[in-house]
Amino acid sequence: MNPNTFSIPDELVAALRQAQHVAVLSGAGISAESGVPTFREAQTGLWAQYDPEELATPQAFRRNPRLVWEWYEWRRGLVAKAEPNPGHRALAELARRVPRFTLITQNVDGLHQQAGSENVIELHGNIMRTKCLDDGRIVTNWPETDEIPPRCPRCGGLLRPDVVWFGEGLPYSALTTAVAAAQSCDIFFAIGTSALVHPAASIPAYAIRNGRITVEINPNHTPISRQMNYVLNGPSGEILPALLAAAWNPQSK
Ligand code: OAD
Image 1 (tube, rainbow, N blue to C red):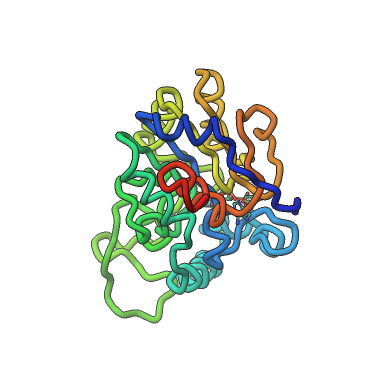
Image 2 (cartoon, rainbow, N blue to C red):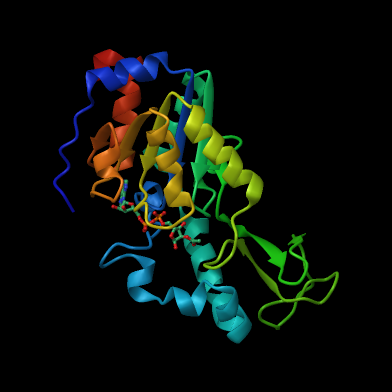
């Protein structure tokens, strides 16, 4: 990890105060300070310890539904214990400060919503929701059972988490709304994402190509860092509150 050498540029602060529409793409890094593991960090990332081919594909689920269900149960437990951090809360506050705000997340943990963010666009679903493997309908209750995974009370299909697995499509309206926001916003932030997993990782390119002001917040460099107008190297739980304070409460800068 790089030393955290962020400073908040004055021009960015001025642009933020004037922005009519701010769009944010968040990734696992924004929840790291809440204790939710990221995916790709060398020691602590989930994919350093587990094989996504065995756990996060439709084929994996069909091969070993019990293993996949139990792994998601473990992750649901981690998420249930986690609380939003100052980065999540700063984004909820930012939404109240600017006329229009679009929050797009790759995260499935619901921590943005817990922090008070509304209308969050969830590109990869939500780990706390469950759906039927066969008809894709959301299932909120099912009878007590020892069977793992449990079965859909309507059709008997296996239940699975309502997340997007590798090889599956993203929800169409979430993706098109996200792309439109990246194209038309005044300022676009990429926060806590390695920008490696497409199609979500392509969203910043729409902002870049359309000449939007682009900002990355991440302690590490990523494939998009060099194309962003501003790169703030450090944890989002520190940078986002500092950015808000600089824009709307300058004496505490
Ligand atoms: P990754 O784990 O790939 O990347 C996390 C990023 O967060 C890295 O670039 C870190 O440097 C950065 N980071 C770590 N701590 C941070 C902090 N305190 N503040 C800010 N940034 C920090 O996670 P994603 O990019 O979200 O997909 O991964 C994308 C998708 O890959 C996930 O949604 C998931 C995964 O496979 C599915 O499950 C479909």
